[in-house]
Amino acid sequence: MIYRFVIAMIAAVCLHLSVALAQPADRVVAAHYPPLMVADNAERPGYAVEILREAARRAGRQVDITFLPFERAIFEVQNGSATLMPSLFKGKKRDDLFLWVIDINVAELRFASLDAPVNDLDSARALGSIVVETGTTGEALLTQYEFDNITRLHDPTASARMLEARRVDAWFLTERNMQRVWSALDASPPLVFGNVVHSVPIAMVASPTLPDDVATAYRKAVQAMQDDGTLSEILERYGAN
Image (cartoon, rainbow, N blue to C red; front, side):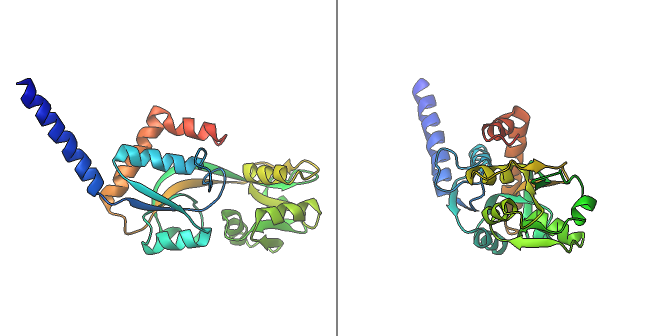
């Protein structure tokens, strides 16, 4: 009797493993954007990458993660070459081109300056110039509100250097990212941050071609991580909670 039970258990395990091995890995693309996605760092790959990997494990999915330049990653998710991307900021014109699986965090946009804080959009509109990165939610927001004092750059490091040289009056991004770049450059004086101007959901996104059952599996896994505190623990490790 025990022998038959053991044989049955071994058969069930083998069947489970064969199904898992037969299942093709979900192709995931990421773009270096600390602390959400961090290239070439196996121990700290970014909180969005860790969330996706844990969600895949709970959903019984295999994942193959590749880091690409941001625009290439976006293109591959849009056209279905890739299945998922660990994170993307909502609030842009291309939102309809993705399947938004589930929100994993919220980013707060602020203005940083070197003198008095810039606490609202009206105060920012009166400035001589505001630097913002091309393609960011911050640029989309200021464009939506028809700001005509925007300086657009492709690199936050260049934005920081421009502010440090006082060639612009303010910088618009998340406080965490601005502070990270400012500290890395050992720039001075300290940044002066204004109030939160806009909150932006950060979500796990997928190709519109992702089957509904797969999207649901990832969504339920992340919801379970929210319920049992795993999501908060991951965010806390990166100081993003």
